[in-house]
Length: 123
Image (spheres, rainbow, N blue to C red):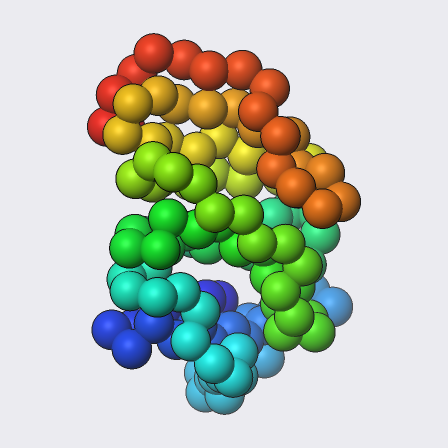
């Protein structure tokens, strides 16, 4: 489970460990510092890898976090406003909604590369 708040913080906790429910009480683990400058505009969790992708509304950044080590694996800043994000279950692709277009992108080791653009505004 991932939780955000007004202070731009991010917490996480596993609800299931080895297909067993951990119980009704949850101890959230703080990522330790501010995730973005300003509001967190969206989160998407990968199914196959321990990563989460977050977007910042004010700083126009996309960050990929490892939720097991609580480390930032990748940061990319864009020129356009970011409205939404969705991460592919493999963690290799993402769709990011900008003010001017919807962009299908490939996640590389050190950057996020544009693969295809769709002329859909404000999504």
